[in-house]
Length: 288
Image 1 (tube, helix red, strand yellow):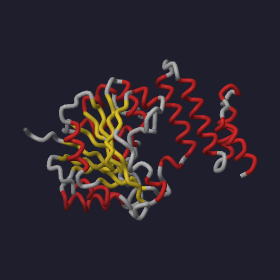
Image 2 (image 1 turned 135 degrees about the horizontal axis):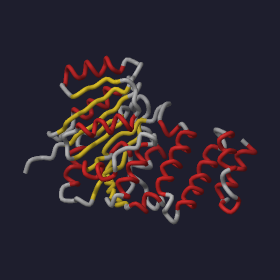
Image 3 (image 1 turned 180 degrees about the vertical axis):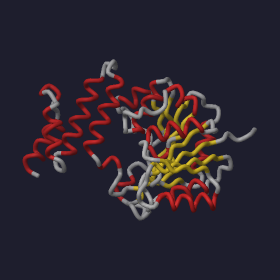
Image 4 (image 1 turned 180 degrees about the horizontal axis):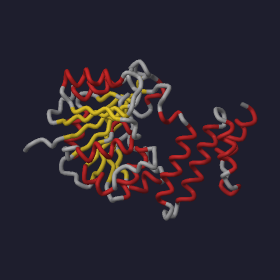
């Protein structure tokens, strides 16, 4: 049997310190049938010159464009992808050499699985493997998630650095929404809502890089875009409780770092939804 073509898409924006390692980790995969599409989305930090040199060496597909945002860039790359399996990959992350081969083998004969993911190893900005509690996502057990598992947070979700999609699942889900900038959560919920399972392998298959500009560190951005994503499913019977649980978690998380945001969130939580996290957050607001 011929091996399915896997399209890896790396959309890069101002990741000059990390982009070469990311691209080379794809080029060094043991799986032989990969199409690599790299798009620079308006970088101003020398990334384009680095990628042009890499392209001359390795011959992958490379486009440099004015900034369009990640969702639009991914949609356009998926539209011209030739693979039956699609891997959007962070320009600051690193794949282990056997990553694609492992996931392709797992996806074989499982049409009900729209997304295959896996565990991750955490590295710092210099590529050094971090220790202690940072590695808590290395050893999570295999899990299969349906929409409610993900939306209700009943099981640990998939890791963005290891997502592999069936192209038909992406098409059925309608692709990425340019108005929602938290791309991973949006597309995971959309694919699961379209009727597919998300299977997360227990093995770490990529390194996720922690650095100063990780998206999750922008707490207002995370807060606004998670709620905007949840709002796509207002008809779900647990919608209000899910949003209030999230608000309580974010109120607690921001209480010691961004008091203004924490107070804004608190004002959006009716008293009947207060819980232990609310009171812990209030204590941090007063004492920190």
